[in-house]
Amino acid sequence: MRPRETMAERRARRAAVDDPAKVLDAAARLLEARPRSTAEIRRRLAESGYRTDLVEEALARLTSLGYLDDEAFARAWIESRDRSRPRGERALRAELRRKGVAEDVVADVIEDRAPPGAGGLAEVGAGESPDDLAAARLLARRGAAAAREVDPRRRRARAYALLARNGFDPEVTGRAVAAWLAEAAPDLDE
Image 1: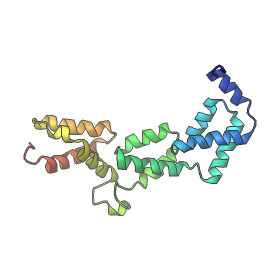
Image 2 (image 1 turned 135 degrees about the vertical axis):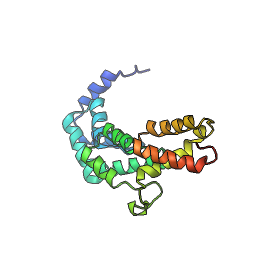
Image 3 (image 1 turned 90 degrees about the vertical axis):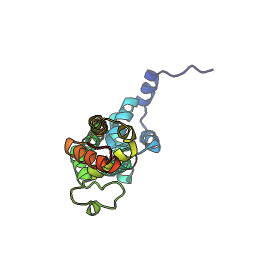
Image 4 (image 1 turned 180 degrees about the vertical axis):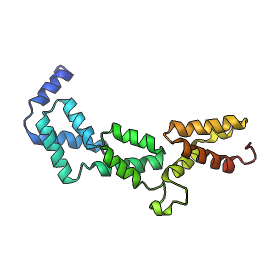
């Protein structure tokens, strides 16, 4: 039986690679699991030990083929978050920054953000931003524990805390909690 290769040995073997196709294959394997930003792929390949020049060549090739596109990645990330785990604008910005998406790309994508379930910003009502709709959706989905609270102040605080933990700013949180309390528990409200 062959002894297991250590991480250092694996990095040394990868550092000796001079075939760009092998680095391209490694990058493609990373993209099989889920879409990733250019910075994520760059970081993962560099940590694996591949030479910087081959990593950059693989990134350029994947970008030219359309497999790497930070703007498309950011749009898909936000759409996925809005659909499955609603987050406020601040949280979305922080997540995309951690993924290595450039701030100008994040700003453009957030500005063009469509509300959950809507076909575009034109369908958002007056005073309803995508964050307002995402906050309302999160409260509808996960606000049951807060709704069971008997004390109105604690009920409001729990709902507010839920939204604050998920990156919604205070103005959005206040509007969403007020609307949720009026709709979800009108007979229990203060």
